[in-house]
Length: 121
Image 1 (cartoon, one colour):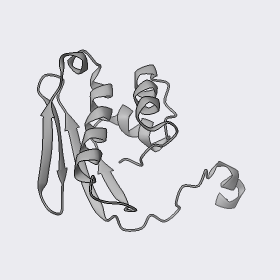
Image 2 (cartoon, rainbow, N blue to C red):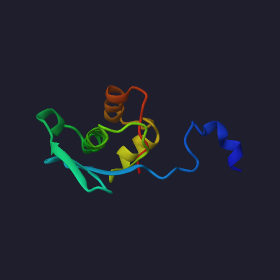
Image 3 (spheres, rainbow, N blue to C red):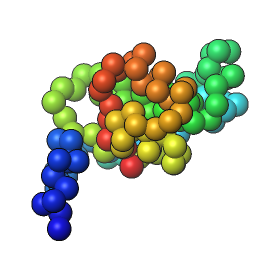
Image 4 (tube, rainbow, N blue to C red):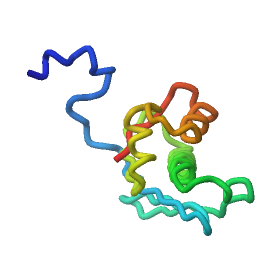
């Protein structure tokens, strides 16, 4: 019974409201990052710098999500964003609010948000 597991709930919504914005993000280890606001077809992206190019693809996917969120929500506040990603490790890291065992993903998350994380899919 679900009621027996309420202590593990951790404040997450049981029923998710409709998002105000749907963002799809992706990363390429050679090219750079990209993100799109699905409803308005607004695209953002850019190349990696030399330091970023050396990172593992999981870290690049997390950074692509970060850059996409920052660039597509810069003029917005108090919104629900549905983030779509194609990297299982980065999605797991976001969904667990930093709870993966990947040192690089934890380092990126802590450097950018402290204890804040986003819900991804």
